[in-house]
Length: 266
Ligand SMILES: [Zn+2]
Ligand SMILES: [Zn+2]
Image (cartoon, rainbow, N blue to C red; front, side, top):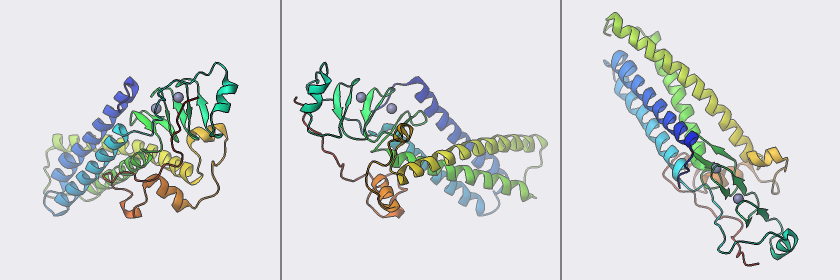
């Protein structure tokens, strides 16, 4: 699924442009200019590109995976008399979406951009041009973590290249000026995106540990279920496998979804 939202598509392209630019500056202007004579050069180039690879994998998964769209019923429900419609539904905590004209499971919300109801919708994120919901929140969090790590790594590499004077580096003034210019742009970019993703990541973790999505926080609904441990809540989002595998964007989210979809015959 891919949402046709111009703002989202621009944000996705900006994300890739920013990541590719960071990679270009690190390889061309930091590693090749200041670390080419030691083993640190190839090591940092490989490490940096590995993080870029995981970042793009997590991002593609977040963009193209189903966030948990509630399927439309075969027969549209007639809501002209909402009272009789409500009594027709056996699931008390299910709510009605008047836009999709159907019943939806608890914690599902309607997204105006995706034009569908999303299970445990957190928010619609233009940076992944998709909703953050029950099934893709893991990839969204992985994406945030990798962006944060990449920003920190880029800042460290630029600062080291400045502190450590390189005796064998090309002394040409023009080259040095270009290097400094690219490094400053990269520092600003990394600081900006780094702070941005850290803030969103903290928000996401608070939402998971509080068992309350961003939508529910606005509605002051409070935690939906009885108290659960932080580990249980986190493994619900990231999957039941070992926590060391939580950051791998290649394993799929395997878990049972609590409420089965009901038949909509009223
Ligand atoms: Zn809806
Ligand atoms: Zn959406």
